[in-house]
Length: 220
Image (cartoon, rainbow, N blue to C red; front, side):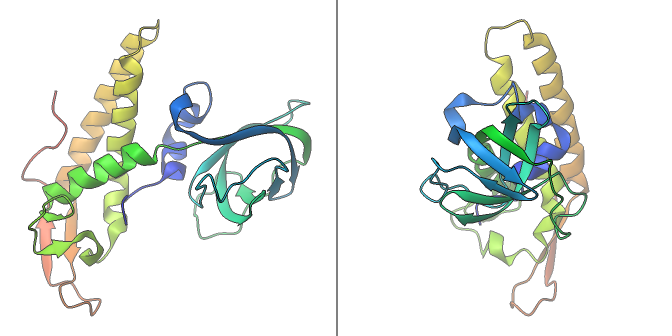
């Protein structure tokens, strides 16, 4: 485990981060000539396995006719050139939702896993867990239910992304700083609400509860 949230979680809040605002330096795979058939996407020129593409990431698709133009969930990597994809679902455990079929489709897979990993380290440090604290008594895998940290993680990740965008000299700098501040505030409030249960014995029963209300991680 090296993250409490993934790219699909970011997509639920800020789809534009996979569109015009994507980080070109964090593109894992891109190309043209793809084909959409229901929930299947095939890109003959791709090697998704070599690119380290995985479920929970997001693919931006744009068909030649413009019918398909947006960001979609990657549900699974089925082969080097084939993905199962879906329209964004309310629940990731439900069946994939088919897209409109398309030919000659451009694709791009940009990930924010580096930022998610950074927030993961911050949160494990906050709760005195390894790897955030080298000599911690427990590790992140000892958390009984990591879903309690998903929301705070995604807020922290998005705050970092907008801080990075604000650092670029462009006309949207003020708006990006406002977005950074907004998500930073959401992060801090969500962190204070967190109650992390630690399963010491590995028996599925909470042995210790740690509160996130003691300190703040993101500072001005």
